[in-house]
Amino acid sequence: MRWSADSDSNRIHLAVEGSVGGTTLGLHISADVIESGGRVLWVGLDMPNPDRFPQLFSHLSPVSSSRFHAMMIAGALDKAIEAIISAAATLPSVELIVLDDWCESSGKIPKKQLELVSNLSKSVNPNIKILLISKGSIDASGKRDGDIFARAEAYFVNNGYEIWTLSRITSGNNRKLICNGEVTKLKIMENGLELAD
Image (cartoon, rainbow, N blue to C red; front, side, top):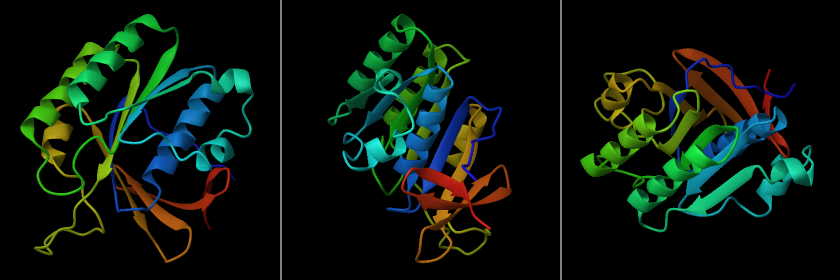
């Protein structure tokens, strides 16, 4: 059965293990938004994989797929966010903004980047869902339960973000998505994410 994101929050920070399917999850949610008539603004270091993108959007018509607008950060997050704020204000029916790999993959997220993302949240319509996807970190102290944690977690929680984590269950295609402490087991399939047994 195809997985459907079930969250009332319009601000989500998804922390992922490396190469675990964070971009796939973002594209899966994007396809659902487009299928329901919405428009998606996608920002990333790279364009979505040209092989993976058509698989995840295969059930949509070419006309529907045209409501997916992608741009590259290219090292200038501030310029990308300015463009996103402008596009969100001028394009009709924008329902989702995704920032994929918007910060360095390890270490502390710089204050400037946190401020830029905070500005994005404040500058767009609060009904537009924002999904941030970044590499998570592990708890080296061993004091917390879990596989992966969001960096700058307290900052995002204080700014109204729901924290999600995505990690591997096995060496196969099974994943564990945790949203607000609730665990969902998912399986990565060619056309998206399905609920796993």
